[in-house]
Length: 159
Image (cartoon, rainbow, N blue to C red; front, side, top):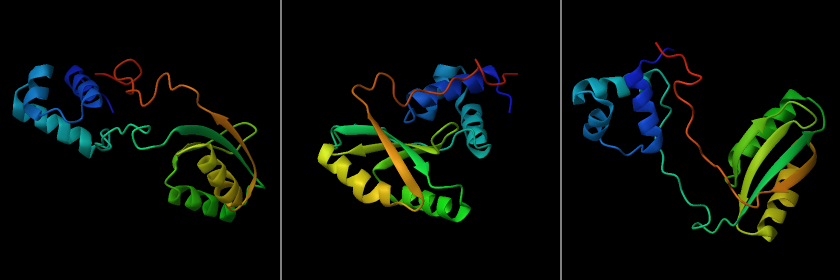
């Protein structure tokens, strides 16, 4: 999909502030309200805008630990992999899951209240998911950049 300059600007501003009103957005991107609204709706319908959500402060919610867990499965058994992914989907403390190339099969981003809670999640839950042979955990000491906006215009097709 190709984006014109106005659409690129709309996407950048919505990533920075998803609660911006259409009136303010239109003003900032240099469009009148109706065309701006139509462009946003078009971007939503095209699937470019996937949704809107509030970013929550995990520490304010009592989630003091962030770990990245590398998972190696027993073998490439489709049934066990589907069961594993179903377990991942059902565990609210796993906030991201990525299929990986290389020596590990998946990378999980896990949040926990504290180290005891993480230990329970990893030993009593993740290690017992179907097909899991091994896990390795790495802990975040400081989030330097998190939840960054996607680049618009620099790598995206622009008309």
